[in-house]
Image (tube, rainbow over all chains, first blue to last red; front, side):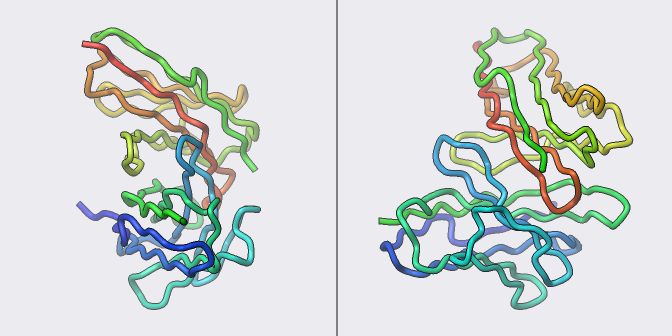
Length: 116
Length: 111
């Protein structure tokens, strides 16, 4: 069964360093998303991406964050100059929705980011 | 933007019991609502998706309903088993771009 894959599963970084989290969405999906979950807290929306551009972003997704689809398969989240409060599980998701119908969100297993 | 709330935050039941988890949302013009399961330290597994034109969806022992006018969705689990122990999350969106999550209900099913 097709699945969303994420790498790395766990990354430890020093405060101020740049981090890139990678995702391979399900191949025929059109919408891509990043969410994060700080330990013990709710899953928070960061950004959605459709047709090679950001569709929507939350107030969390500031200039420190960027997303890119560098080729036909990967979808990346870059965090510049990481802060301690960026420590969280980051989830990638994808959706095959068309313009007229919502689709089911499928999530990867997550990338745990620890900022020291 | 949807604001999603889940009650209760935690629930403990004996094995075999039927149970209902609740989810409420603020925007009645909801586009879709999806229920997920999350095991500790793991990703989110999709359980059921209800589109705005639907009232309920069923999968095995699970049944999810959607009442847009009251801003509520429920997840019914029949004949609960210890393997059902997990956190259950609901997420609602006003469009395809922006699904917002509740804080979840942590379910424990005791043998």
